[in-house]
Image (cartoon, rainbow, N blue to C red; front, side):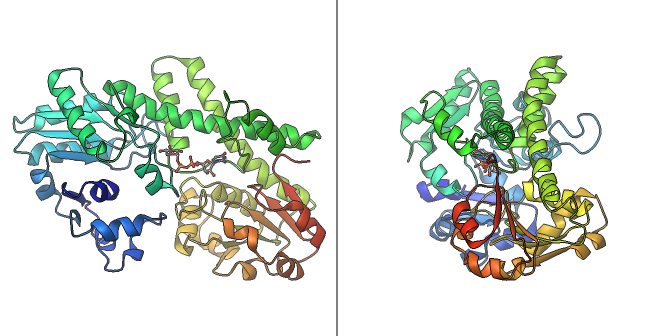
Length: 446
Ligand code: UDX
């Protein structure tokens, strides 16, 4: 919404949330304190805030005044009841719909921005029309394809914008209203329109395809570790085939983030609910492979440290699910840490952007052990060199650029020997580190 406000000074954008602390943070005088770390975002907020971008907790007033309402609440995987661990929890979506219906006194276009299971628009429409005050609602699907860490650039220059709407005259005119907003800065040919269901499904499928590429190359990485093949060379060799393409072929400790796993689980759940067992099993394998990769990385560390890490210090460089973000949702680091904590390792974490309370929160949330035990075995550092001091091994969990430029000789000198590095992102120069004396294990290289 900040980027829409930046690009369309003539449109008033009000972002509302019931969480007062969060809205206060978005209104913080110092734009560097906004609650999301994303390159370029604070500049966008600085430019538009107070001009045509506002953050408020007055939800009803904002709904009442709006001609278009974007629903952007979270749709986590259900943790209870039917579809537990698989389907999306639509509780927040429904509450939004009911509130919009109650407050609205004029016709509105409702835009699904949250990622939703196919046919959610139907449920939305049902609630809006049956509980509303007789006003007209058009429901559009407008999934978001930005990636974290590059969100502002992705929004300013997207490959495509997708808008799904009804084939009726009113539906088409609602689509046109949304097109006019994006067309202020995006070439018209990159704005695709479909029916609502195709648009909803396309979002899940795009994420499933991307995640599938990572699981595919990660599957090959394990085979490479058993043979003389090098996964980086294989990725380059296949990626130059223009039909395959070079992107999303980086073998890693496993994908994380708020979207991939959740959206695939959703796809699996929907397929299964229609009785499409083979379709469901096919996509579920992407998750199974990813879980295997995370676990394998942790168990390789144990194996390499003479089959025991009990009482040993292992330094984690990186906790975020990818670089240039402070987001840790579903980060591989959480699961690798959990596995190593089961083996009684002592973990020392450094991440340039993730704060200590988030790291403990992530582990406590797993419920594998008590918060007190997590506190006992994990220590968070603000200085990477301190985190690595007297460690038996270092594990790279996030591909932060700064890791490449560390004084590795200094780190080596202060570690226990043999000093081991497990590069879960293949970002370090293994030959250079070996010349210093490190024992280096990369993903997909024997
Ligand atoms: C993803 C989609 O890319 C985006 O279009 C959608 O809107 C939201 O979900 P995001 O989760 O922000 O975006 O990050 P992405 O760059 O896709 O990375 C996801 C995970 O895959 C990260 O953990 C990343 O490190 C990992 N990854 C990515 C790999 O392990 N290898 C790769 O080659 C690419």
